[in-house]
Amino acid sequence: ARRVNEKGRQPKLDPSLIELPYQPMIELPTYLRQNGFQTWICSGGTIDFVRAFAPQFYGIPIGQVIGSEVKRESRMLDDRLVVWRLPEIDAINDKEGKPVCIDRQIGKRPVFVGGNVGNFGDIAMMQYSKWRKGPSVQLLINHDDAAREFAYAEKENASLNAAQKHGFTAVS
Image 1 (cartoon, rainbow, N blue to C red):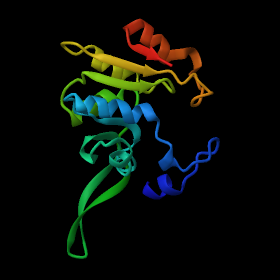
Image 2: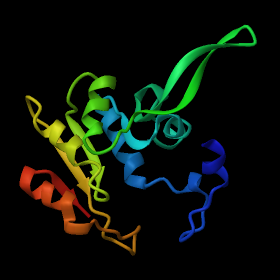
Image 3: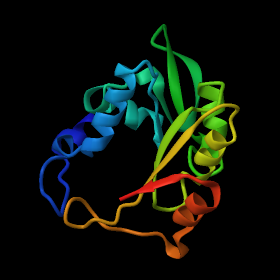
Image 4: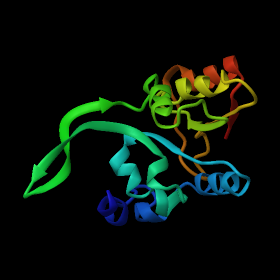
């Protein structure tokens, strides 16, 4: 993961991936931490991959990363106990799996969640946050500005429709 982020290039913009974090994803968690919030990353990517760059990119410790996971077991290797990754999926942290993984890691519904339009992956996480007791914020990023970033949309606008139906805040 570190090698991909250091050596990988973004084809359209050309900088290395390490030079390309989405600026609001750096600024917002920093602001939230400065105001007493604990911040987590909840990604559909594998937890091992996201942990490799979350501290450097976003200032989020590896223990506050939620992601898809492979099954693991303990094994003795050369008289040393190691954690061995198995070729099986343990949890998919996407769509309806996100609330389950959030509950497993945090144990409560988040006060604030931010997600993206794209592949319907964050709707369930936003609903889970919305239906908590007390105030909450669900921020949906609509990637519709090709001049400043990339423009892409979902078929049938599922995330934007869910935002309107459930009262999530959608921003460009």
